Length: 225
Image 1 (cartoon, rainbow, N blue to C red):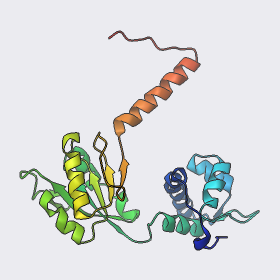
Image 2 (cartoon, rainbow, N blue to C red):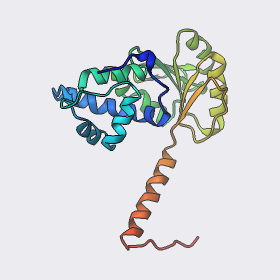
Image 3 (cartoon, rainbow, N blue to C red):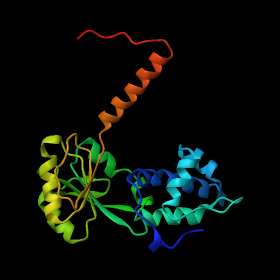
Image 4 (tube, helix red, strand yellow):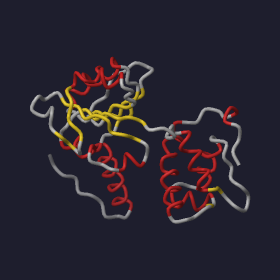
């Protein structure tokens, strides 16, 4: 059962970060024809502990039914509403290097409610090219794109030009930015920025691998500079 949305309290950022994983697991279960799922089963499919999952879902006002669990379709719809996925979000990717082109060709965005409406670059040699069926537009077109209802800007430029692109997006009125550039962006308080740094994630994995190796008694030889 679901509580009145008006009675909900603020949802912690850590919970919001896990909601897409719950939604992924629920979508997989629905695809298998499964109509209900226990908290233990959903937690295992999402890679979290069941107590954490139940606490996360309680922030949505969703508590399941004792002895039955959660209705898969209803819970997926509830999480989709909380994530703002009940309507399509238009996305522009700025920076048509290898990463930008790979993201443009990724078909998974459409199934999650995100439409790539524009590809942008400041290189005259690239503007006018066709990538994944979309013509690359000039950076000066950002103002026009925002006026057409652009929701999210994805920055895949080198670090030295990322802030400039960010400023152009903010000036154009875009308040949601996903940043793949290896730098920290300065934005006004009303602008939300999510940073994706692949090298940082690899470093974190290396740390955990080192810890496991040390714990198993293998050790790691220190490499002289």
